[in-house]
Length: 284
Image (cartoon, rainbow, N blue to C red; front, side, top):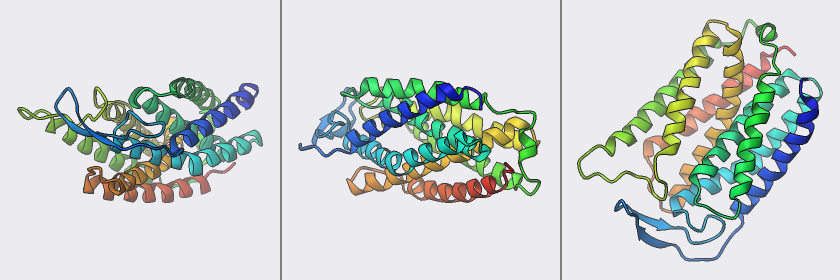
């Protein structure tokens, strides 16, 4: 594989830093949450304990759910996929790219969304490292020969349909939340952030990639196979994280949309099925 020497150093560094960040986020802390009115007039509850001391209870519940998924799913996938990649496995490299996509997305959100804490530079390092390693892995694929490694039995229509459904759901869910802020006197649900950065990332990046991957896969284009493969792995880990976030928010009494709480686990389950089917149809 191209750039294997660089990956031998960079992937372990990502693993160690991610482990530090996830464990630190889950480490229990003492304190009593307290109510606060933001400068926009939104009533929130500050967590006031642990690494996420200055984040709201709702935000901390989401970040800790993501830390748990990163620890028990993301890091094992990173280690296994990297080991398989080093052995020349195409399945392993596809899994590695998708797992790096999950880590990249996670620590972009932590860099710009988490209230400043002692691990800020760790988040920045993970953002930077995972971005460049993700690019290195993506450019290592031979796009001309990639489609030949997939079985003709690959259910391209079902996979594309799932990608389109995920794009449509995210679009409707996030535009609905944004539109609610347009009403006269409405207070945007920002909690301790300055803008809807998650919605911006999803609408500006994730939704277009889902649509592009689905269209190109239906047309049997090389980028369609690559983006769909990487996307299914990335969305699987992210879907598990988002589903657990909803449950954890409900556990701590934070407001959560019942629709989102129900739809995300369904998408995650379908994503798991499609990811398994896709990997089984990789001939490598």
